[in-house]
Length: 471
Image (cartoon, rainbow, N blue to C red; front, side, top):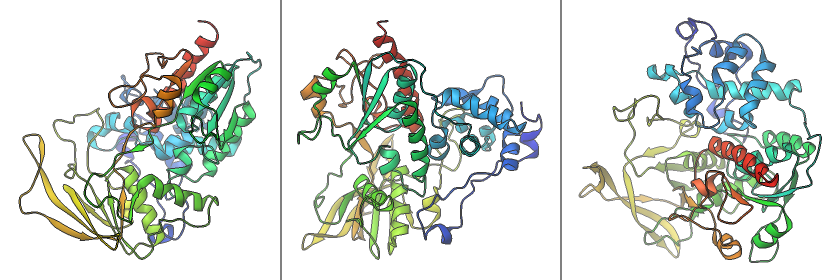
């Protein structure tokens, strides 16, 4: 273990965030990497429990006590190698993962878990800086070609492993640049895109082919059909994510001024990335309401702050969670507790237990939102009588989550089987009902965590390798 009394001597370190008035003037990352001395202390807080609940809480099974001890003993390259065994992209998870491992840490019983996410970031950033991460192309090639559709975390993890097995991994991405939601859905203030680009450079040098601007299955004819793709490759991987947004079904939904969160975030990310000059959804000087209290809603909140919104309110349908774990939410399960994101720290109003009932417009433009307060009774969400409110608004951003992948072309062109939620059905080897076609990540799980996408991409790659080698 690190230091036997480390968790007593050293408190949990708070996130290192730039000052609010400074960070609101740019799109740079809010959080910074902890210095080596602090990382050493935080690694020393790890108790090396007999049962590593943190490792069990991580979908990747990261060897957390091992790399924490390595950091504590100043063996940073060893920490990198240990972490790289289970996680292709710790620079992504160290910035974006909600860290279920920390909820499962034994020290989380006292609400002070080891800063595992920050340690991952520190290890990966140092590994790149020191040059420990170098391309490792396979020594031999099998001659097999695998098409991977989607360049998000699941697709990239699958591509990395399929390539490592000696097969040719060809990643098809509809957008101009690879990265999927990592690039177009995550604002730069959470992860700057050079973090993606340096990893893509490694993958490319290892032999992974990245083909952007290719819309597989598109009815426009600008890309191959799914059937053509299967015919031209020895296997196909579906890693298209869950793009279909949950809609707001109320009168006035079609008014000018109502925008989907991913449209809002994507255009601003394209502006920051130099792909477009301006966004249609700039909210400078406007009154903004964001429906959705999750990570996507917070990303929209931080974006609205930086665009110069006059006033921003973030609304969550459910009541506010408790400050500490409820008795029905025991350790080591994920802690459903009240949290404040970096965007919420920057300003705006947070409203809970509120249901939107209708939207009002003038000359076709949104001017007001109506809703009622709600409460939980007998396990059900019910309206509070005589609680209707009117909120004036210029732009309403819908960050209500996602309901699944865009599957119509898959069904029409390949005959892919779906479950009742219209997610792709797979077996334990991530195989669909079509021979040689596999699926991993949100396309079959539904919207989930980046760490699950990486884990499934890795596991699925092994199944694809077995298939290509004939068992």
